[in-house]
Length: 98
Image (cartoon, rainbow, N blue to C red; front, side, top):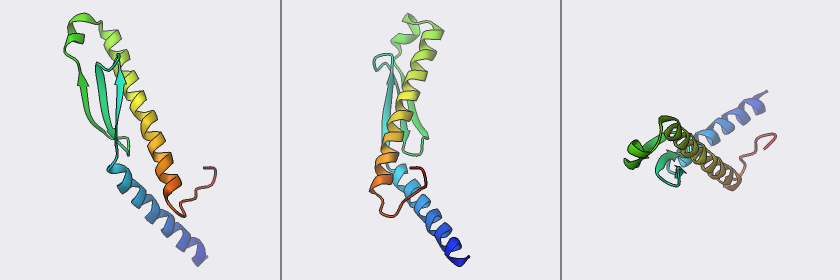
């Protein structure tokens, strides 16, 4: 019983350490050929978003929304790759099914 509690505490400590490590990472997701960018940290928090002002005159609302989705999804995929790399590099960070 105490071993399970100890393992749970160790896992919680590792998760906290991982979250801290990931907060130091950042990725840039792009949409609309780089005219829309989303900067996201390793914990999938959006740090900034940028839209090229020329898009407001030349693109429809639907196209601009598509570019925002593309940039956000691109950033999420990049963060997931960073997360996987960080998890593999942490000794003893073993989650079942990963």
